Amino acid sequence: MHLPKAALFLLLLGAVVDALQAVYAPEEDRLSEDLLKEAEQRGINFNTLLDDILVSARKALVLAKEDTVPLPDFTEDFYQKIWPFVVHGHLHCTKGSLRSLASVKRTGDAKLAFKKSKLIVLAPIGLQELVVEYDYDASILHLGTTGNLFANVTSNSVTLAIEISISVAGCKLKLDEAKINDFGPIKVNLTGLYPLDTFSSVIAEKAAVSLHDTIKETAERNLQKNLQKIVEKVPCHLPGLKDM
Image (cartoon, rainbow, N blue to C red; front, side, top):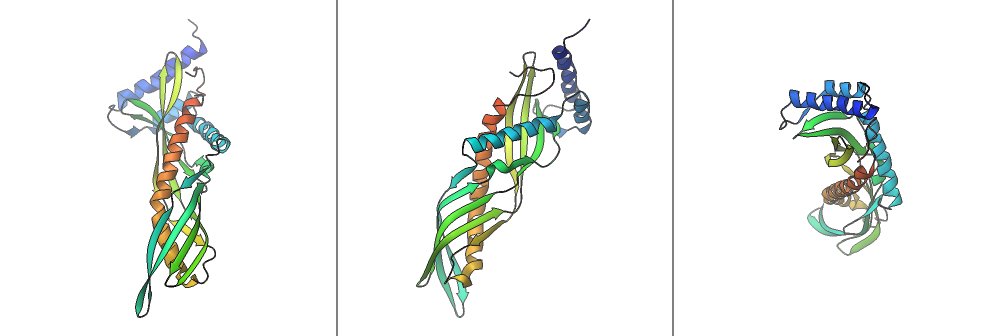
């Protein structure tokens, strides 16, 4: 009996899922290189699938003008020892923005997992560039100055997890997770520091510490929000299957 291409592919992909269920208990979060290779041999290229999603994500972020998002104002006190005294200063930053969320790209190969009864594709992704800008004013003793603060994140890594739902009706993608699991040091540069040049290191260090969690949380929240919308609209592109 001759089966239509779509029906045949459903049977083949179903065999992969059945094999996962046979090898791993549903409650275990385990990866299977052998099963990933088997799926790819049957025409399923998960790297291509994720690359298509990220291309759509980059375009959507730019078109929606969400490549740049606002950051909250913040104020920090800092202290500097000027023998024999310790002087107290203030740093106030406003009009902050985080840009280059559209620089997201895949940084490693996708892996297939069976996670809590779900078929999941996992892949490491990252933001090639993540830039912060603020206006600032700083003061210490009777001296004060204003300028611009620029910061960039030196390294980052995000785990992208996408659930694939498969039925006789076709296939559907859903974002399971987009979590930042590595967020490297923040490098801060300040313009217009004169006459506070002497305090540049302590001001930059204070700003970097203050910004770290804010930037991480903002980047992760906006990636999750935008990827969620995009993933649900992107076709599965699995050969022989209709998109639900």
